[in-house]
Image (cartoon, rainbow, N blue to C red; front, side):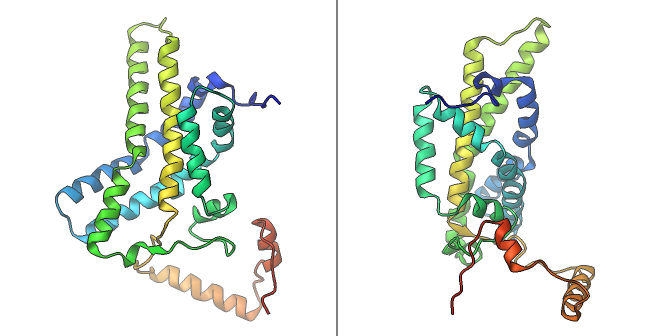
Length: 251
C-alpha cells in the first residue's frame, strides 16, 4: 500500500517556505543558553547559577522548540518511513518510540507544564538531585546530539546563503540538497531523542520562585469567586473528553 505524503513532498523539506518556518526554531535562544550552560559547567559555577540557566533551557525547549517541532512530527515521520534512504535514522526513531511512556496527548500536556493522570510521573526529580548528580545531568544534557545537529543545519544553510549571494543564478546541486535534507531529518530525530531523555525527569521551572503580589491576589480572588459560585469551572467530564481520558470510579 502506497503511503500518502503529497501534503509534504519529499523534496519540499529544503524549499524556501519550509526553511523559513524552520529558521526561528534553529535560531532559538535555547541553543545560546545551552552554550552558556556548558561554559558555566566548565568554570564550576554554583548550583543556583546553573539552575537559572537550566530553567531557561528547559522552558525554551519544552514551551517553544519542542512545541513547534511537534507540528511537523507526523509528516516528517511519514517521509522517513516511506523512504529506504535513512535506515539509521528510522532505527533511532523506533528506539525512541519503544521507550516512550507518555501518550501523544501526555507529551503535549507536559509541554504546558502538567501531567495526565493516566501517564506515569517521572521517578527522578531534578530539584532533589545532589549537586554532583545535578552536574552530571546537565553535562549529559548539553552534550546532546541535538545541539551538534542544530549547528550542522545552520552551517549548511549559511553555505547556501553564501553561494546564493555570489550569483543570482545559483541553484543548489542535488548533493547539496541531499546533505541539507539529511541534516534536517537528523536534527528532528535528535529532538525526539532529547525529549525522550527529559521524559525520565520531573522538573517544575516555577518551583522555588516567588509569586508576585498581584498574581497571588488574582489567585486568591479566583478561589473566592469559585467558592462563592460567581464563576463556574469546567466540568471534569469536559476536561477528560478534551484530553481523551476515560474517567474511572476508584471507590
